[in-house]
Image (tube, rainbow, N blue to C red; front, side, top):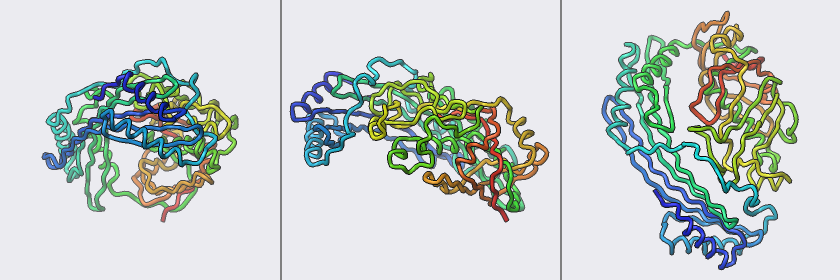
Length: 438
């Protein structure tokens, strides 16, 4: 990996200032990756990649210039600074441009244990994918084929430095194994998948379990029925519930707010969810998939409630968007760092009982979300629930509503939390959705 030599960055910053920059920021990233896909017990694809990149941002007062290079020789880095300065000289002034305020930078930050180096062993990856595929195929005779089992590994190093005397760096790693199975019966074919991921390759779920779970989920989807159009309550599994909250985050992000392209304009301090719902950002979670000691600008990340008792407590702001709104950066340049959604305490089974009669959504399709109006319409599939129990699979339906109303109509959030992302939530019940079917 690239050596985060403080002297190098200091020399480059001093060079940039001598050439006329009033402020300068440097970002360096290196990524090493491996990906292998197995089909029919043979490697179908095997890819290695290694990328390095340095991005230079300079300011001449309020004029901004940007340049990048993947050539890490000193002369090339100086040339990138010269190029950025040339751009800045002809750029228009922007009152809101500039580095973060010095006192907001993470000069001291914790080790969050995000990196577990591994030798990038392709044979290990192939064997893991083979085990997942064979376990899935052996699960039931209705499982006809595997649409690919994939093992992926990546290791990265991020470095930031700027003319406020800040230099920060942290390594990270990410490993995953996924498997897609195809089942068939007299009504046709269905597919589904399962996966595992972790910072530490040795903490991945057992490969055979991933194959078996992919097979079970695929079998459960066979012989889907259509539903007549109706109003009904719905329940979203955690991976689908995540998407609902991500729409909220997009709507309260600085870019959407200062451009006035959000259905949640002027929502700070206002109630948009039920009283029981709190969303806490925990950027310093050890091993967390969304953890970071500082954001994409070097601003120190801090724990905070984004939503508290249903009310918006914090927008999601970078330095630029904060200045545009007359506010301070929230340490979210690059997005949220581990959002934890509060639970009302029910298990998955208890939520089904609470739903009683309605639609359990396990897959969404399409991009029918308008963040300006909040209108929401997505293709969906899942299971119809009667008397608190799954009755039959359904497909070829659409669920629709408005996100403002959907947020208010959240009735419960389960304790079946899915930790396989930077947004932690359980299954969720939303009352009164429109279902368009046959």
